Image (tube, rainbow, N blue to C red):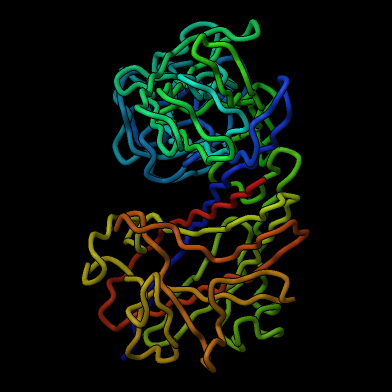
Length: 466
């Protein structure tokens, strides 16, 4: 009897959290500043090319013309909700650099040449810094660059942030040590230094403590669309101001921080000038020849953007690997985390729950996203999981494939569908140049796995702290 074969591909998406670099802009500056974008993807704003019809294929114009600066489908991720003209559609997959498919056909009213195509990527930003001045009845604020007009209409703006309308951006503040009651406010448009900004402010009563850590957050701010001169794979960067004001609204301390956004599918991020993160493919010959993660057979070749497992055999492991590299001059190092959007679903379908969904390749049952276990029996332990290996002992990996004398110590990827927290896979606590680690992927199926095309995608996030 012939065994059933399943074709599976894991689509890798690297959403890099971009770095930040503080510099003095006033007589004094705040210290230990770290700003993290919860989602550092660029928003999408393009337009339809000529010749679209009422079917599931969508072709965009590839000529840059502001404000329609999104000219490449690499900015899209499967499952994105894309607005075409006045209707919403779900992205199925990228077909080519200028064409993508959607899960339903375009309406006949949404196929006109130059109709707008947009995706508003909403990010929650978290700022943490140390107060350097004691102020009574003062306030802390973040200023994000805004457009001079239409800065709060929920349509992505080129190179600036949009405040949103239906769910406008808001402020969250906490941990202002020594201060009394705190009042968060958000304003869509203010002018500072002659430039327009979105203001997110936390006023307080009492006197704050010098040296205390302050946390200030922003919810629902819409990320910029790419600049007109944007290059695929290189971050667009923006200056955010972090300020401490007195009771009269005068600036006491101020520092500028550079944050950035990049395509979700691009695996190499040049982050400000001080942090870099890249993903590289590993050939099958390299993996087995070097016995990466102890693997000596049944490996496939990966690229920087995909892990193509190909045809999976019943009760037999298929292995693959990618190399992740981080460099930063941040004095407090970095953390690299990973999370999957969901388990591997047939044609990308949702896989609710940890296991038992018929048309899903479950995460391996031998371990969890928190606790590792030795994964050596393909006959009774099917699913998808990963392990880690440090090729030159320069990084601190979360666990290792050969820990505790194991053959292939493995974990599940943390899952967004299960509302799990992204898992740390590598970190350092000081400046570093070229910390690298192998992520080793493994998959196997049981005899009852339905045939078809399975996939999910992963988010790797690198965050540096200065």
